[in-house]
Image (cartoon, rainbow, N blue to C red; front, side, top):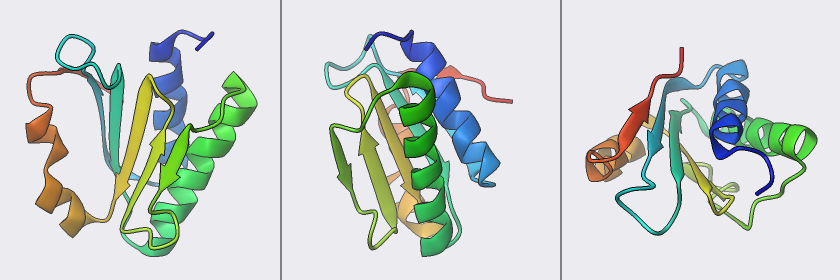
Amino acid sequence: MSMDNKKLVLIAAKACDEKKARDIKLINIDKVSYISEWILIAEGLSDVQVRSISNSVEGELRQKANIQPIRKEGINEAKWALLDYGDLIVNIFQPEIRKFYDLESFWGNGENLNFP
């Protein structure tokens, strides 16, 4: 990734925020995991909103950082959409699914970056 990964995660967070995503969490897992450097977790209240948030993230990262996700999952059902950019993994959940998987606890030993 050419652009600084912290910049990327902030672009993604802003794209979530623009679509009224709730409770956006940015977690740096660089020191605790090999799978990625950043995890972004956000919440949409319906299939339509989850889809619209993931489209927004994908569009902004394509436009501003010229990158595409390595893989995408769950966009059609939109209960849990995942965009994997390698160094950044974006998870957009509906509330009950987010609660169930509780990724915040799973990555509790990562470092949180506050998004305003």
